[in-house]
Length: 167
Image 1 (spheres, helix red, strand yellow):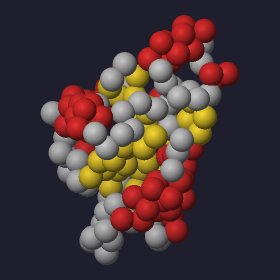
Image 2 (image 1 turned 180 degrees about the vertical axis):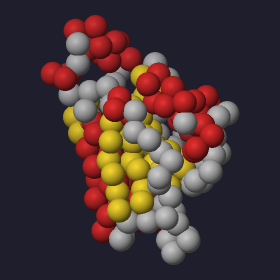
Image 3 (image 1 turned 60 degrees about the vertical axis):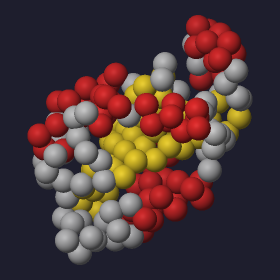
Image 4 (image 1 turned 90 degrees about the horizontal axis):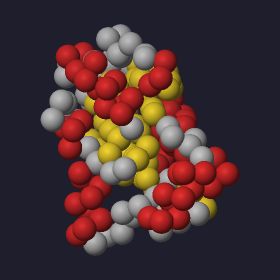
């Protein structure tokens, strides 16, 4: 598909505590190494999607779903996103297991987005739990939920996915 794609790809992301920013950057670096012209932009900047041949959209997960700003970005750009291949990634510390309940929970993260667009691919990446980057309330919620602390991002998995997406 690389030859058929407009070589410009947008990697748009929404982050809550910074972990997703690094994931988006690694995806962008890998796509650039594959020969694409890549723009990596926070969704808060409301990037325009019309001039891209493909779009990667990623969001941190909070309260079991994408961040509202990421879902709103998809809603706002729904028509344009239906015209190009779109791949989605989610970043979270919970539901990392291979058990059925973890898989069901990970799929549910994207239910709202999937009702708006049909992604060509979607993936889940483990995030980074850094209590220093969280508000007091978020630290309390994280502890109560049993969220792990530490960098659980699998850079090989992230790079591998970016090497294969839109291929």
